[in-house]
Structure formats: structure tokens, C-alpha cells
Length: 365
Image (cartoon, rainbow, N blue to C red; front, side, top):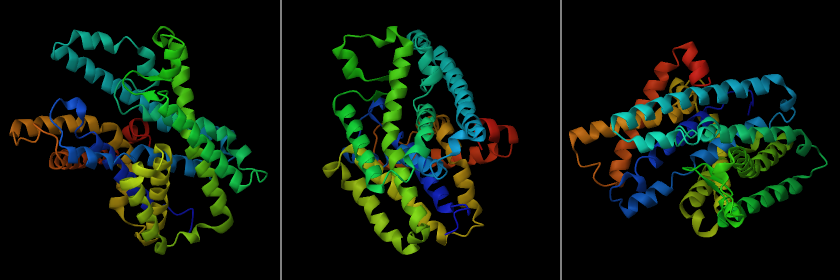
């Protein structure tokens, strides 16, 4: 397979992952309405989006292990991550200020400005923006890519490093030292043991969050280096279309049953990289002139960024129509809300791409 050819299968998987994010956000315990148990089980099948985005980012990033020495690489990260993050943080911050002011919630408004570092560096302006600083923190691992890509590190040694990093992350999770999205705190278990109120020390709080994010990204980093090592020796020709069925089976087994017999980090890693490999495989059968899939791939990042806004409009419209969908979270309500929000987001982002300024700065294209 020609590696220089755009992999439209990956674009399709990016679109699927963007939709998965929207579905996960289409009904949860924070909505204050009853949730059908089947809806909870259904929602759990779609938590693969962030792991997939990490897997894809690290896979393509580590294909050129010496890229960290290139100023263009860091310029690209600035343009594609930092600038969109700042723009969308500003947008969501303004929207939240307007909403809390109009709905007469002064406590929420005051709370919004109590942790400016979280808003600036941890995605505190909106629940989904944390992924951008997470990806930026993980991107610093590229500095070590050339070192671990050296031939002195055998493939089995890289696999060992990957397993160790998985074990480290699992220990952090089971010990209560993961990342808490709402409060932007990491290593809460350690902080409790030390009786330390980290909110009084914002720089330490920020350092702990970014340290955790780097540890979270380590398994994806080592898995990406291992995969690229494997394919550099054997070529992508191994990923023929005949591999689609076994890879799809692995993805489905891990996604549906993985939580029963696999550690969470291992499950996420298998799901993410099987979806990535699936995207590479099906690229061979997708017409390279397929503009719909190409557009979906181009819009996927923007869909992720803008979907909460379009979802709230969709919720308001559904509530006005009064179909009863907002009175209980069910599989049907999640599908209707998520599909409507997804296509509205896709159309909106596709229109935004027509503006060179919006495409470059707001969407990182």
C-alpha cells in the first residue's frame, strides 16, 4: 500500500469516532432525568473515540521519529492544537457567561473564574476541550521517539515498555489517582494522603495534570512505535482487505466484552489500534476521489469542537416539539439526538471550511 496516498479509511474512522463522542454526550447522569439501563450499556460501547484519536495521532506522529527536531512540527502543533484551543475556549467561556447571567446563576458564574489556570490549560471552558491540551502534552513524547526507535531496542522490549506503561496507568486509576474532569485534578489519592489542598497551589495542580496526561499517553506512544517498527520491516501490504474481518472481530470483542476480562487501559488500546488498522485496511477499497469521506475526515476535528453548541440547539428544539424524548434517556432518544447533532455539526463545519481563516485558525486544517 502506498503510504503517501491519503488513507480515506482513517478519515471514515475519524468521522465514526466524532459521532461516538456525540452519542456519549447524548444522555448521562448529569441530565437529571431517568436513564434506561439499556441506554447506559449502549453508551458504554462508544467510549472508544478519545483512545482512537490518541492512537491515530501517535501512529502518524512516530512514523518519522526524528521529526521533533523540525521547527515545522512544533509550528504545526501550535497552529492545529493551541490556536483552535484558545479560540474555542474563548467561545465556550463567553457562551457560559451569557447562559449563567441570563439564567440568574451568580454562583456558577463566580465559580467559573475561580480556576483560571484550568480554563487556560486544562479545557475548563467546556468539558470536551480537555482533549486538546491532553494531545499537546502527549505530543512532547515525540522528543523520545528517535531514542526508542533505535535498533538497540528490540521489538519485544518495546512491547514490554508498553505493558509496563499500561500497568502504571492501571495502578493510577485503581488507586484514585486518575484525572477528574470537572475539577481538573490529578493524583487525588496522593494529595489526600499528603493532606494537600492543591487548589491553593495552581502551578502544582497544573504540573500534576500534565504529568498524568503524559503517563496516559505512554501506552499509545509505545504501541505506535512498535507498530511502525513492525510495518517498516514487513510493509503495510500485510494489511490487505482480507484482514478486515479478523480485525473487526477483535474490535467488536474488545468493545463489547473487553471490560469483563481486560484492564481498562488494555481494552482501550486494543479497541483504538484495531480501529486504526481497520481504517488502513479498508482504505484499499475506498475510491480515492470519494469526496464525502474526505470531507468527513476534514470535518471530524471541527465536529468534535462544535458539537456541544449544536447539541444544545437540538435539545431545545426537541423539547419545544415535546416528543417526550427529553423526559428519559433511552437508546432511541440518544440515537435521535446524536444523529441530528452530528449531521448539523458536520454541515456547519463543512460550511466553515469555506472560509480560509476559520479553516486555518478555528479548525486547525
